[in-house]
Image (cartoon, rainbow, N blue to C red):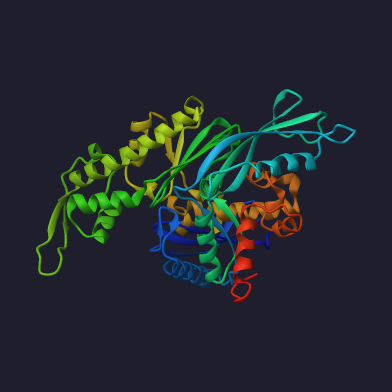
Length: 442
């Protein structure tokens, strides 16, 4: 395991980030390198300009290679965006062998049946996450293998995404000269980086405030219970500052990051900020109090959407561990107080540092790198699953056991059995499309 190195590629609306890491003998992550580039070709998690996105990926990968001294060829890629949807579904199978003992093959058959359910046109299933099982009307079973029974039922959390959105992400990564090991839902990756096992057991809501969207994941009893996407993030706050203060976008972003506050009441001193004007024009003076009022107005709106999602999930009263906020938006001053004010739920800022041991810890231990770090963790968990399945972590157990044929290192074998998952379908499409040109990178 100490020799396994994984690269997480976070393709976000504001930035594209590549993080290189490996796990040490104590289970912590050593960060070997990090690369970051501005993301000009992505809007709200969806690729809108292929060439710009490819160039940004190449820049981020080049920086990560330079720092780590490692040639990067395979990456674990995050997928998010307002096109992501989730739903609950129940599956039932009847055992067809004489000893009536549930085997792993039975569980896999039940999971694979979930990939056959009807979805909206143009969408595909990304993840099938098991919640709990029922064996012959005995409910609340989390590991049915080895039990005796005739009928096996399962409740599943199913995550779907737009096929074209995933195809475009895959296309950009391939054109950048890389191979995709797996596509991972970004809220799951962020959860792996910033949530503790105790929080996921007690009940917690992860809120990842990105540039284009705000992703939500609710955990309870170590099970992912609800996922959702709010189609607003930090970029819309920047646009509000740009319009409200009548400044250029780059100045608006600097105002937000350097002087911004999510709570206007927290600004006790009246600070006047001077912004250079355009060519041959006088400088503009902006009140920090007014800046905070603009930011608070939009952030309150976003948090009201989050509160509504928590209420709709049915787990509002089960969040014993409260809310954990992460992502670039979590770096805004007084954001913790604002979230508690709007939702009435205890909140903390989520940092990936708990899982980091050495290397570039100071550079990576920020909320904005939670997703990239989580992609590294889940990639290493996938390798550990293939080597030591008995010691699989709870998060990877939900993602990987849900469809063993879709693990990053087994999907080719699954293709042979005509039982490919979401990533396998995307890869097959590229193989068929690009086989005549030789552009596909195996």
